[in-house]
Image (cartoon, rainbow, N blue to C red; front, side, top):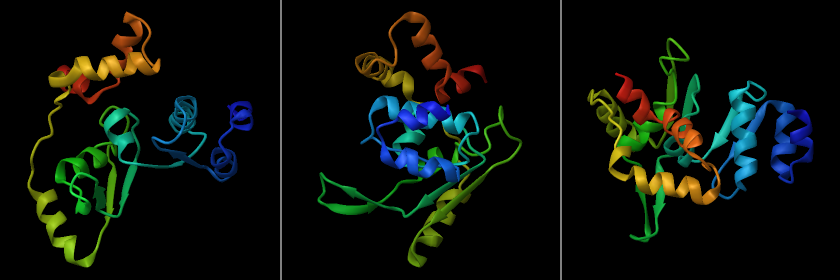
Length: 170
C-alpha cells in the first residue's frame, strides 16, 4: 500500500497519509478514490474525510461518522438548503454496521438554530430501506461505464457491497 500512496498523483493523499488521514470526493480520479477506500478499509488510515457521495455510493463501514455542516448548495434552487433526514441517516448508517461493529457513533455539527430540528428528526425511529431496486439498471450501467464492473462476477460483488443486499438478506 505504501508504494501505491507514493506513486499517487494526488498531492493530498501523499501529504495526509503519514498522519493517518485520507480524502475521498467526486473530483478525484477513480483510481485515487479506490486507493483511499482500500487504505481506509485496510486500516492504513483511521480518518477518511469525504463528501456525502461516499455514503450513498460505497459500502465502507466506519465506527464513527461526522457530518460537518448541514447546509448544501442546491444549484437548481440557487440557494443553500438543509440536508434531509434520509441523507443524515444514510451517512450515520455507515457507523456501527452490525457485521463489522457492535456499536457506532454519529456526530452532526450544525447551527444552534437547527439542533432541535435534527434531534427531532433523528428521534423519529423510521427504518431505512434501500431503493436501489428502483434504479439498479442505471446504477449498474454507471459502474460499467466507469470501469468498476466489467463482468457478471464483478456485478454480483458490486451488489453484495450495497445496503440493498444487506436488506435482502434480512
